[in-house]
Structures are given as structure tokens and as C-alpha cells.
Image (cartoon, rainbow, N blue to C red; front, side, top):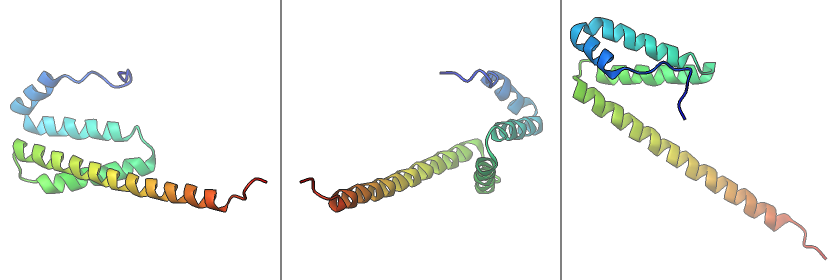
Length: 108
């Protein structure tokens, strides 16, 4: 399902801008990121800004291929963290269900 509130992304427009005017491309990229972050609550916005800052720090001076590799690795790290947290949550829930069924009185 497509989000109608977001404008259509025109790859050719962005690619052309990157080639013709890298400084304007970067300004537009930063503005687009801030617009997207503004759609979320304060906690999510701050988290997003922190992740972007960490990314920018890691890729400073990198070429496009290196930036892509860092972005991919950061996404993989995030997915692994989410998987770990979900496994911990599952264990806590299983333990809670087990202890609640053990403590229920038997019906006579």
C-alpha cells in the first residue's frame, strides 16, 4: 500500500542533481531526511537523528560504494538487534505463561 502523503521519488532527478551539483544534492538530501523524521514523535525523531549522525560519522570521506556498504551493515546490525530483543521477549512471555499456569488452582 502506497503512502499518498509522501511525494513521488524521482531517481533520475536525484541522480542528475548528484552529478550536476553535489552540494545542492546534499542540502536536498538533508532536508528530505529532516522532513521524514518530522513525521514521528520526539523519541523516534531523536533516535533517528542519532542513527543518522552515527552513519554520517562512519562514512565521512567515503565514496558511494563504501557508504552503501556501511548502510547495509548498519541495517543488518539493526535487524540482528531486533531479532535478539524479540527472542528475549519471547522467553519472558513463555516464562510468564508457564508460571501462571503452574500457579493456577486445579478445578475440583
